[in-house]
Every structure is written in structure tokens, then in C-alpha cells.
Amino acid sequence: MNYSEARALLDRLPRLLVKPGLSRVRRLLEVLGNPERAFPAVHVAGTNGKGSVVAMLDSILRTAGYRVGRYTSPEVEDFRDRICVDGAWISEADLASGTARLAEALFADPDVPSQFEAITAIAFERFRGALVDVAVVEVGLGGRFDATNVVSPALSILTNVTLDHTAILGDTAEKIAWEKAGIAKRGVPFLVGPLPEGVAGVVRAECAAVGAPLHSADGVSVTRRSSDLDRAEYAVEGDGLPTRVELGLVGGYQLENLRLLLRAVQLLRTSGIAIPDDAVRQGLAVARWPGRTEVVRRRPAVVLEGAHNAAGAEELARDVVRWAPDRDSRRLVLGILADKDVDAIVNTLVPLFGHVAVCRSASPRALAVNDLAARVRKHATEPSCYDSVARAVRDVVARAGAEDVVVVTGSLTVVAEARRELCAG
Image 1 (spheres, rainbow, N blue to C red):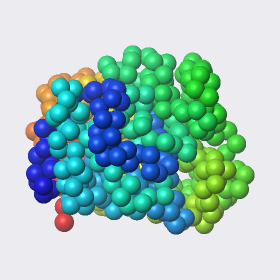
Image 2 (cartoon, one colour; image 1 turned 30 degrees about the vertical axis):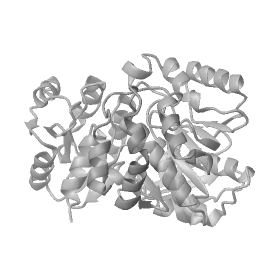
Image 3 (cartoon, rainbow, N blue to C red; image 1 turned 180 degrees about the vertical axis):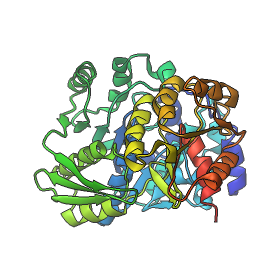
Image 4 (tube, helix red, strand yellow; image 1 turned 135 degrees about the horizontal axis):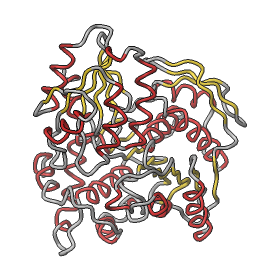
């Protein structure tokens, strides 16, 4: 089986249908000889920030000399970027080989696995074959019934809980918290970011029920000293941590992600994973996470930000005002998936921008341009309308002044398509 054949086979699996439960992925992993048991993992869940925490921890551990597997979703640069070993995407040959090993099992049962479940199994097989020392694994959706919830973690992390994917995970933060806290395991430290009290109570109860020691980042203090579109500098207080770090991930929301990450370093050290201070500093300085407050052009500055829910839009709004004090110098390229809280995102971002362009990605879940434009017009703004992300970013960037800031946001599918257009070659 070659790579094209493997992709065609994987594309026959359900991609948009969410299929909660672990029976299908376990069936696939048994065919592969249970590769998920071959390595310890750091398992990261959360509504926002989990990908950034994964990226920072991956960079730190690699800088410390460990061989690291990284599993994230969805892809931003390439289908293969979900599965990385030491920062390198899975090769076409390895993805084809992993798919071939699963080929017979994929359609052997009436309960066909999702594409995500198959890719998860292929990722864990790749990590075993690469003899990784540790894998940093991002939850796909929720946690309790997510395909990744078969790993043997050395540490579990829950970044935060806000409303997202409500049709699947529940219509309250407490219901969503129950789903995400389902990654807690007996005897495994469970680290949580800031949570509202009602949500925190759900997480405490779940950890107590399974016997997972609960930890917060309260002992770590992080203060942003300076920040621009290139990097941010932070002062740090915490036992055994460096007192100053620089981070190439410049979104304001990274402050809380960084605080949680540094607490994770402390906990991993106590579990026997040696992480020198130099590895923390150097790993953070070179950490990158495509599509998350990523500056891909200058003069004009073009920022890609995958904010796709109300909380993400609010964080982005604070950054936008900081980057470009003059409203007329701000240009927005916006595309949103129809199953998201469209009005919350529009209401938060549109009033901040002097120029707004709306578009839709190629995703079948994307909101129609006319519908999105109608919501934008409620803010007395007449948007430019485009039938593709590529056309939107080409036109908006061409029209922008050298000192303008162009923000492309609303969905990771929009960001991925914009990135391909802007970073080609």
C-alpha cells in the first residue's frame, strides 16, 4: 500500500460523525499488539490551550534530550502533521505501513471506526516503532470517550473548561467538565488550570472517585514583562523554575498556558523525568504552534489565530487592541463553522475592526458566507464577501497598508487554508 492508497482508505472512514466510546480504537490497537502500552504519556485535555501546552512541553522535553512523540488534531500544515516524532511529521511510508496493518480490521465490524480512531492507532504504533521515551497526546474531543483515552499517562492535564461542542459534550460547563475529567487515572497526577467553582467541584469529585491526585498551578506565578508580535518575555516565580523565560507564542492567553506548563514541569520532575532549567528556557524560546497567534507576514502584519469559540474570541480581542491601537488599521478575515457559537464570536470581534471580510472554508460544516455576512451587518459593518479563504486573504492582504494588522480567524479550517495560501513555497 502506498501513501495515496492509504489516504484513500482512511478517507472512507467517517470523518464528521463523532463516535464516542473506546471499543473501536481498542479493537484496532489489539490488531497492532497494543502499542499504546509501550510508552508513558502526558495526556492533555481542555476547551482551549491544550494544543499550546502540548507544543511547549514537546519542545522542552526534546530540548532535555528525550525522544518525544506528539499527537495533535486537526492538521494545520499537512495531513501528516498530527503525528510527530522529535518534531518530524510521520513519513508517507510509515503512515501507509500503519494503515496497511489496519486495513482488514477497519471494515471487519459493522461498527466501523472513525478516521480519528484509526489515525490515533497509527500514531501510537509509530511512537512504539520509534522507541519514544514519552508521548505528549492532545485529546481530540472531550476526554472520557475520546480515542486517546487509552494511553498510560505519567501526568494528565486539564487546561480549562468553557462551552464548546455543546451538542456532543453537553450544554453546561459542568457536563463538559465531567467529560473532560474522564481522562483522570488512578494514581496519576491530574493538573488543572483555573476553573469556576461549579466546574472545579465536578473535577474534584471525578479525581476522588478514581483516585487521581489533584494539583493546581497555584504555586507558580507568571508575569508578562514585555510582548510584541515576535515574542513575549515573562518573569516566573516557583520552586526550582527559571526566573525568566521567553516565548515565541505571543498570544496573551499563553500566560495561563505557560503557568500550567511550568507546573507540569515540576510534577514531571517529581515523577523522575529530569528536565533541567536550561531545557525549559531553550525549549520555550523555540516552541512553535502553527495557526495559534502565528505571524506569517510583515508589513502588513498577518496573524493567524485559530480562535473558534467565545472564550478564544475574547482572548483574541484583547490582543488585537494591544497590537493595533487604531481601529482603522485592523483588518479581519473571518470564517466560522456553523455548529459554533457564531454570534458570540461575531459580536466580540467585528466591532473592533475597521475592515471585515467574511469567507467560508472547504469544510462541509462551514457557515454560509451570506449567513455570516448578515450577522456582521448587525454591527453596522458592510463586509467584503468571498467564496474561498484563499481569495479572501489574497485580496485583504493586497489592500492592507504596510502598518496594518490583518487577523485571520474563526476556525482552524480557515486558518489552515489561509496558511497554505500565505506560506506556499
